[in-house]
Image 1 (cartoon, rainbow, N blue to C red):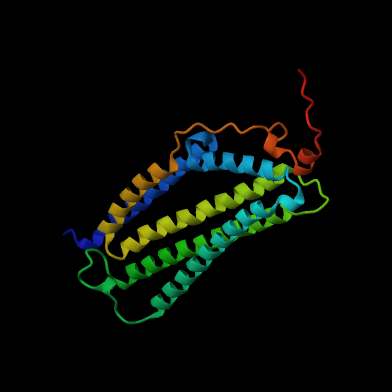
Image 2 (image 1 turned 135 degrees about the horizontal axis):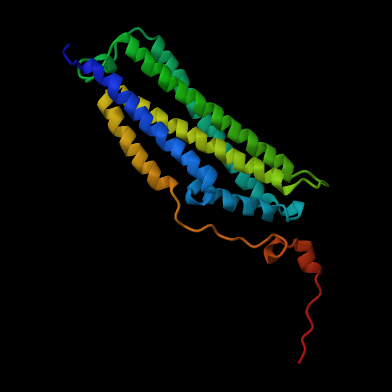
Length: 243
C-alpha cells in the first residue's frame, strides 16, 4: 500500500495533540504538588495576600480594589464575547457549501469533506470551552465583589480568597482553550504546520509557566502597618518623646 499525504493527518495530528495534552497534565501535576514552581502558584500567593490586605480596609477605602476586580471582570467578559463571536463565524462558515482555500490542492494533507468537518468541530469546541471558562471567571469575580462590599458582615477571608483564585483558574483554563484553538487553526493549513506549532507552543508555554523565583513571604495582615484601618491610624495618640 502506497503512503499518501492523507495519512499524515492520522499520525501528526494525534501526536501534536498528545504533546499539548501531556504538557498540560504535567503542568497540572506541578501545580497541585509543587505549587511554587509554577507562575500560576506564584500569582495565587500574591492574590491571597492582596485579598487579606483589602479585607482589613474600611468600606470607604475599597475603591481601588473594586476597580481591579471590575477590570478583570471586564477582560473576562470581553474574551468570552470574542470566543462566542468566533464560534458563530465558524458555524456560519461550516454551513457554507462553497469551496474555500483550505480544500485546495495546495494543502499538504487530507482535504476531504469528512476531515474538514472534524477540523471545524474541533475548533468550534475549543472556542465554546473558552467562552464557558471566561464566563465562569467573570461569575467568580463578581461574587468576590459582592463578598467584599457586604456591609456590616463578618465574611471569612478564605471565602473571598477562594473566589478570586477560582476566577483566576477559570481565566487560565480559557486561555489554554484558546492555545489549543491556535493549534487546531493551523491544522487547516495541513498536519505539518499543526505539528510544528504544537512543539513551538509547548516550548513557549514552558518558558511562561515555570517559576524559579521564591514565593514572597508577605507580612501577616494583623502585623503589617498598611493593614491597619485608617481610622485607627488617625486616632492613635502621638508617641511621647523621652530624653
